[in-house]
Image 1 (cartoon, rainbow, N blue to C red):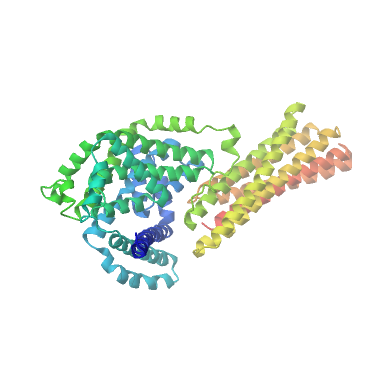
Image 2: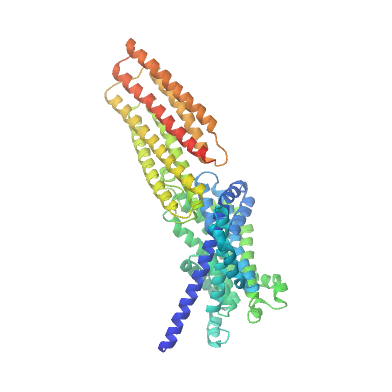
Length: 571
C-alpha cells in the first residue's frame, strides 16, 4: 500500500470512529436531558408500576424507551432493589422490559435516520433549542439539552453513513463475507461473538446496533450476518453491566447476573431458530419491502434493511420475554446461587447504592445517595437496639460481642459518611438545578447528624464498658428509666427511617411529638436523679454513669429530629 492509500485509509478509519463518537455523544446528551427533565417522575413510575412481573416489563419498556438508556433504567432498578423497594423478582421484570425498550432506538434510527432523514433538520433544531439552554427554568434547560442531543445523534448517524465506504461494487470483499455468511450454526455463533465484541469495544449496544444497520445498508455485511451480530450485541451489553458491577455490592452483581442469564439464554435458543425467525421477518415486513425477501431487498432498498433488523430485534426480545417471564423465580435463584454472599454482613454493611461503576445523571446520583443515607439510618437504628441489650445483658461473652459490634457499626457509619460526602461533592460539581443543590446540602447535613448519632452510641458503649470494669451496677429503677428513654429514641429512629425511605410522604409531626417526649423524659430523669443524689439513694459513680447515658439519649434525639427537619424542609 502506497503512502497516499495508507493516508486515505487512516483518515477514513478516524472519520468512522469520529462519526460513531458523535452519535454516542448525542445519545448521551439526549438521555441525560430527558432524565433531568423527568427524573423524579420516572422514579415514581418505576416504583408504582412494578406490582407484578407484567407491569414490571411494561415499566422497564416505558422508562427505557423514554430515556433511551437501558443502563439508566438498570441503575434505578438496582437502587430500588438495594433499598428494599423492589424485590429481585420484580426487578427481573423491569430488566426484561428494558431489553424491549432498547429496541425503540432501532426504530427511531430506522425511520428517522434512514427513511425520513432527520439529519437535514438537525442544525435548525439545534438553533431552536439553543436559547432554551440559557433560560432560568431548569426543566426548559433540560428539554433544550434533550433536543440538542437528539439533533447531534442524527448528525452523527448521517456522518457515519457517509463515512462507511460502499462495498457493493467490490465483489471480492462481498465474496469473502459470503464465504463466512453461510447459514451454518458455527457461522452464526461466530458473528454473535463479533457483535458481542463490538458492543464491548464501543460500550453502547445502541451504537453497536446502529453501526450494524449502517454496515448492512451499505453492503458490508449480509442480512443474516447482521441478525447474528444483533444477537451478540444483546450479550455484549450484559457483559458491560457485569464489568460495571464487579466493584459493586452483591445486590448489583445479582441484578446484572439476572440480566445476563436472560439475554444469554435468549440468544442461545435464537441462534438455533434464526433461519425460521428470518422467514417470519420476511413475511412480517412484506408491506415494507414489497414481495422481496430481506436478502433481495439488501441490494434494492437502503431503508428496508434497518427496518427489517428492527423487526427482528423487537421480535427476539419480545419472544424471549414471553418465553422466560414464567421462569423469573428460577432466574433469581440462579443469580443468587452464582453470586453468593461471603457472609451475612456482606449484604448488610457495605455501600449498597453508590460506587457501582455506572455514572448516572445528577438526578440519579442524588437518588442513589439518598438510598445510601436511608441505609445508614437503618444501621444507626440498629445501634440503639444494641445499647438497649447492653444495659440488660448479664452474660460476659455476649456483652463483649455487643461492644465489638457497636464499634464495628460506628466504623461503618464513619466510612459511609466519608464516601457519601465525597460522592455528593463530585455530583455538586456538575450542572445542577436549584432544587438539587438544596437537596445535596440537606443530605450532607443528614449524614453528619447520623454519623454523630453513631459516635454517641459508641461513647455510650464505652461508658457502659467502664462501668462493667469498675463493677458499678444500676439499680432496677435506673435500668428501667434508661430502657424507657431508649424506647422513645427507638420510636424516633423508626420515624426517621420512614422519612428517609419515603420521598412523597413525611411524618414530621410524629417525629416532633416523639422528640418532645424524649426531652420531657430527660428533664424528668434529671430532676429525679438530682433529688436521689441529695437524699443518698444511690452512689455517686453509678449516678454519673446513669446521668451520662440518659443525657446521651436526649442528644441522639436532637440529631434524629435534625434529619427529619432537613427532609421536611425539602418536601
